[in-house]
Length: 170
Image (cartoon, helix red, strand yellow):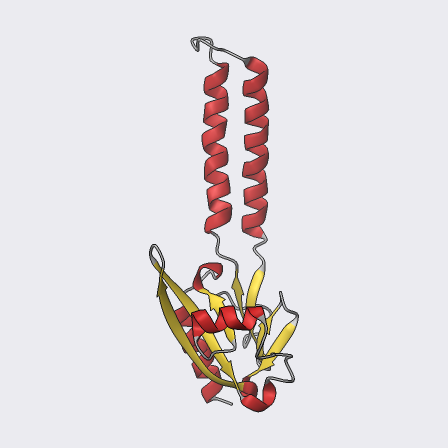
């Protein structure tokens, strides 16, 4: 969570594990492509090996670019909680409660859950009946916003503590 231009703003980026996996698998395929071009291989195929190496180097470069330009998933500003994907900023005064829920599905997955005040739900166009609302209710109970911990470059607990600190100062 590096601070951005404003000292009061914290940007939470996408989890960097996925670009790193792209880089690592690209490196593995570079080695496989070189191995395929070796003269001692029974099925030596130079063109196929060169093609694999070129594609793998491209994936390494793409992973490196992605790693340096991770998208911002959440921004904690002085005004409120900004979600760039939704192009919405939830004001601190509209957030009622924040919690971390843990769900066990082939491992432990944490969710950052936020409950908005009843009078502010209409402002953010949160309707109680839709399919997405029912899915969120299944994961987060009576919370209005649910964020998967695996999307963040930090843990849900750290975000919860920072949001609670900002809610306490409002």
